[in-house]
Amino acid sequence: MKQIKTIVVLLIVLMVSGLYAAQLDKIDSLKQILRSTAEGETVDLLNQLAEAHAGDEWEKSQRYASLALDLAGSLDDKYGSAVANMNLALYYNRAQNYREALDHAAVALSQFEQISDDWQIARTLRTIGTTYALLNQTDQSLDYFLRSLIIFEDIQSEQDVAENVMALGRIYSEWGQSEKALRFYERANAIYTEKLDYKGMLVSGNLMAQALMSLDRFEEAKELLQQTLSTADEHLSLQLQALTYTSLGELYHRQAQLNTALDYYLNALELKQQQSHQGELALALSDVAGVYQDAGDVPKALSYFKQGQQLAEESGELAISAEIWLRIGELYMQMGKQSKTTQAMRSGLKHAQQVTELTVIQRANFLLTEAYSRFGQAGKALGYQKALQETTDELNRQQSSQRVAELEIRYELDKMDRELSDLKGDAVIKDIEYKRQVTVMLIAGTFSAALMVLVVIFIFYRSSLLRRAEREKMDQSLRLKADFTAMLVHDLRSPLTSVFGFAELLKMGGEKPQAQIHDIAKTIRE
Image (cartoon, rainbow, N blue to C red; front, top):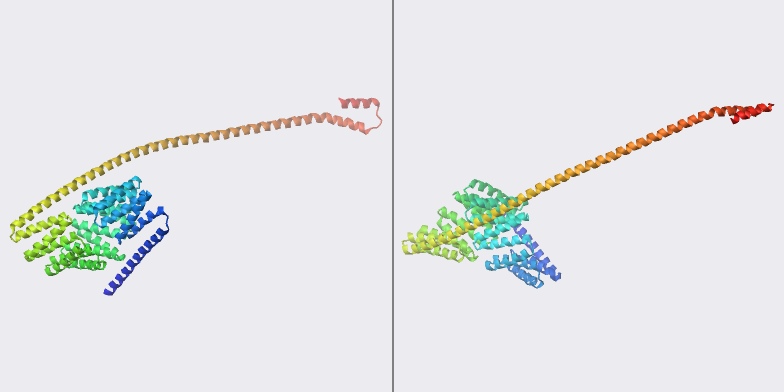
């Protein structure tokens, strides 16, 4: 079994190396073209290089985007400048410099609107929405994602629609509205399935399972995750296999099947160790620790929690670090170790405050209040109780703002739906009017065609009658001529016979008296 796993890992490494080599070839090709290109095309190539380096080498991506922006400015290339600003916005999101990201995205949005590029406008709106999501301003994030979604739907860009509805699903999931989140995830999954986008299918499948678990629909979640795992195994995706193992671990953990949950969490941990992503690895260690904690194995739980916390802190994942510190504090509180309990919880509170994670801050204040109350320090407990109340009030204000924002967005969407319905109604009326006009034109055309056919038939029939009359007239003339000729021949034949007879008498000669000859000649003459 180990040998098979080793072979699979080697194959995956070779595949990844091949993809990386292909990416390097693409970058080298772009650089070669850049050396021989005209000035006007340089901006586009610099932007392409920025996009090619994004994901693995963000610093290089930022340098190429900056060069593209400077050159586009000198050439007054608005499109090139807008794309460069978009690439810089993506870079600053990655660098967690959200102010710069928003500034560049706002400039890009303005430039794309000037040149009326709908797809880029929608893409920029989505980037702004992502930035606000990273800032935990989910109400504003929701607004931008919905505006972006409307444009993508209008231009029928299905892949982008799927990405947007996934983002909207995550927002509703954060708000605890799992039913809404599930509907968005299902829509994204349907699009990815139609497009045979296996990565999208696997990610959306896992998110659907998470939403189903939140709704206590464990059997549906289990069936979905088994299908997802089968697809991940088929396409040898380590990252997505790890994601699915984690979801299955959570599923069995929630159902208190600790041994099965531990197996899946350990499988996920093993795969994540091969990927060496410290933030994800920290979460995997924390998941394993949670199972050991519920199983009552405190030493192992502490060991895994501490490993996860250290990795999270080293990688700058302070929100993850804060959560793990709090769980460590809970373990120490179970063990009755006052100093270590409060120290761990305060560390968690400090890290949560640094990244303004209000829900984690709320939990930290609650746990510190409980810890100091348990250990008999009422004064400190009261202080954290006040901080807890303030955090709860702030969260309530945010939730109220979110609800107001959602209502406003829903109102805008309803308004747009009404406008769309009105437009559809106008379109239906115009369609009916058009069909009526077409029908009238068809009737008139049919009547005209029938009339023309009748005229042609009449002309043909009249011509036929005329030809028949002419033929009859001609026949009659020929009959008259024949009758006249016959009559003429008959009338000439009788006297000519007599003439012929008397002529024969003269021809016969002989002695005839002069008087007889005179009578024959007179008769012939008559």
